[in-house]
Image (cartoon, rainbow, N blue to C red; front, side, top):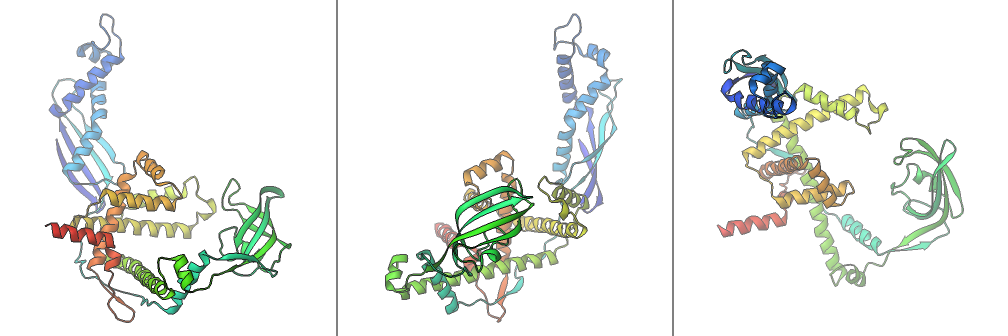
Length: 442
């Protein structure tokens, strides 16, 4: 088999493939066997019909056509592999020549196909990219907030005779009606004013209410069979409570932690806050480094592939029709093109750095992603496996590691001009220990 590549544009190629009859013949023989099982000829058992009789009954042209149809995808895949091309779309195939139907062994199969492919990019010197992030310093206020959050976990609720305000805890009953028909009701719900984790408009409705008072407001339902519909919600407050925090002292430190004194607890919270600041800076630096990479690398974008993804987005079963606007389409197109460029660039970096994915890394990523979808990790993993999505997830993990590698090489300073050490962000403690153990073993 021979193949020749013609570049239609940077992301689309046209291949001409020539398959000599000798290479197609096994497919032809298999086609005769298949057809022999499908037809009945008097005097011959099923499956034992001679090829000459098959030619007389269905025609040799039909046999050749069957052989080509069965082998075309394999020949296409072989041509893609030989030319080191990765398809991004379904090929548009045109058969231009078939073997002779008159004489056995004469002629060949020739077909052409056009297909969108992953573009190949040239990476710049990405070692030493310079970015600046916001300066982050741990202040006493950060430690005080962390301590108050910890105290809140051990706090107790106490009834108060006062209107509900921000951070108050209210016990309430609610009913929701759509077009006058009750669609939901609940009693004895506990809600912290300002948390925003219930219905939109709830905070405004309950603020200022005392026990025994009620309010009515309208909201758009976010879930259930009435999702997206406007509902009239009546909320009745049965109790208003405030949270009393335990006193911050050595006794509390012993209750809430492994430390004996409040000073030791505050020192630990300070270290945690510092690590949190590093994480914030690391996330910011990672995004800035990726932005720099995208600026430095020219990535041709296949319009047809992007168009298809956009149509899938707006034609999805859960897509909201009123969101299909020109402005929203432009936003989705920009995000889709950016995601495509990110993927191409980071895959190239991963190849250059010979980045691999350990099974433990894939498992960690699945556990994290499952949590985002509110699913149990094993169930989520089984769903991914059944849908054939595990390779996609491995690619995502590999790209994340590639970006971490670029960030490791980057020069990061803060807005005050001070150098920022992101070692703990780029290489978590467990990974550093593994690297050190490997180095010692060598």
